[in-house]
Amino acid sequence: MSAVWHPFFQHGTEPAPPRALSSEGAFVHTDRGPLLDAISSWWVVTHGHNQPEIVEAIRRTAGHLDQVIFAGLTHEPAEELAEALVDLAPAGLEHVFFSDSGSTAVEVALKMALGYWRHEGDGRHRIAVIEDSYHGDTIGTMSVGERGVFNAAYDPLMFAVDRLPFPTGDGAATLAAFEALAAGGQMAALILEPLVLGAGGMRMYGPEVLAGLRAICDRYDVLLIADEVMTGWGRTGRLWACDHAGVAPDILCTSKGLTGGVVPLAATLASARIFEAHRSTDRRRTFFHSSSYTANPIACAAALAQVRLWQSTPMQARLEALTAMQAARLAALAGDDRFAAPRQCGTIAAIDLVVPEGGYLAEVGPRMRAHSMQEGVLLRPLGNTVYVLPPYGVTEADLDLAWGAIASFQV
Ligand SMILES: *Cc1c(COP(=O)(O)O)cnc(C)c1O
Image 1: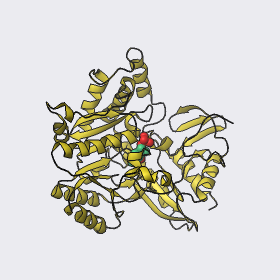
Image 2: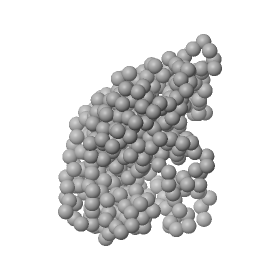
Image 3: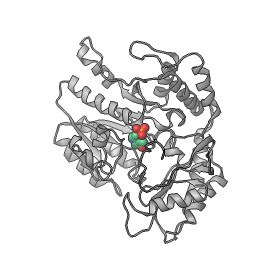
Image 4: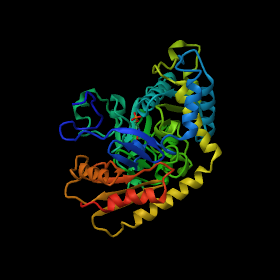
């Protein structure tokens, strides 16, 4: 047996996984043959595997600058990347704090929000969240995420939050619940995944709900934290999901696609108000947070190359073309009674398999995964929800292969 303990992998039931040998474009080549990466390797690969500009930036940087401490030193890849992120981000996000994963980006955001209110001399400390959300697997991010089979054992370690119902229809119930909570006081921040709850089952809600939540935040001076770790870098058809609603959060988290999915890096962007509450002659107001590898120069260079692709190639047109390609294939399954609840937000398309027993541990999930693997497609259903979230370089034929694997499944 291998010494490796795999993530989200039941070693008691699952067969030994294929071995990845190389990756290129939309494909991972394994010792059992090629696999179309229809889930962008857990939502990280944006343009494609082994994107030449990104690989070249890594090579170039590694040749002369590797990890250096970022507390009290700075370097060009981080400076240029921060500037580019501020340029591309929703208005008002002017400061960039680096870390190394989506979870750490969210932890940083929560600490910034609580730090902000403490330094303002305000005792606000409550955090509002949307039910079924996912923000990571550390104790803090699990606390603001949905509770369930994944984290029941750690419940004694988690802090309390205020939960809003998932927005359905025009989101009126969610908005009313948030308004009542905010009016009750002590509300420091609302954290949400804008427009698409990823791990929660690719559940979607409209931009008008997001705009409504922003308006309530404004009215009661609650900070809005947008966790764009999954939705960022074009997944929803715009650079940021927040762009659909014309909403600017007070804090924005990005990771996954930030480096194009090539190496780990994360950033938490904050407004001037939050930065200024920490900037002081009083050293106790320092933002006391760092990871060892904060702003790793090689990762920053990779991210900068990824960001330059947004500035130098017609990405918006590519997103629109992919959105249309996905829509056509989703529509082809309409009326097929093995499937229900087709939904799409930009390049993300999802559908539910009709089974008697849903939920994350639905037995249909591993069966669908095994079936698609046979067909040469990497899919990873969330319970009975199957989705295609491809790298932007996929071809029509690639998508036919992915959706063909779904259509040929015996539910
Ligand atoms: C994946 C994800 C995270 C956690 O990111 P990691 O890099 O896995 O720690 C946080 N928030 C959202 C919305 C995610 O999809």
